[in-house]
Image (tube, rainbow, N blue to C red; front, side, top):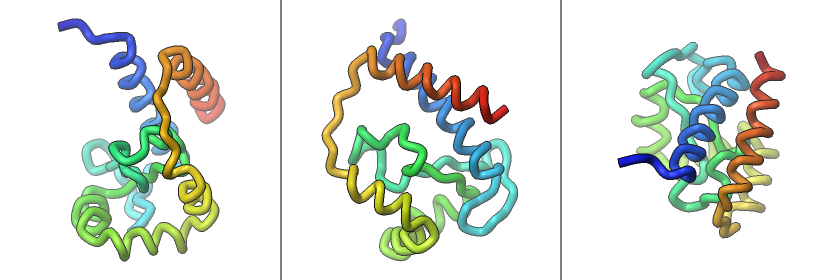
Length: 126
């Protein structure tokens, strides 16, 4: 079955955001500081994608974790991990609190614009 235009754009956005976040965070786990690559590098959302589509590709909502910190700490200790994030990144948390209740239905044209913008950002980072 062929992928729809929306599915293709969503995958492209997920991929480019993952790359931008890894560059921004220097391929380093934001909790323990360990250098991570490949499958050990986990991209983690603060506000889950399923809870707020508007923040899915928001850089403030995403961080790099090693597998252990992501799966065995972040997901198992939501109160502690949320508090840690708010203390480490207060400005990002303030931004997320402000936008976490937004209801967003991305139009195809908006996804294309976002992808074009993110390609420019990525080009500037390389």
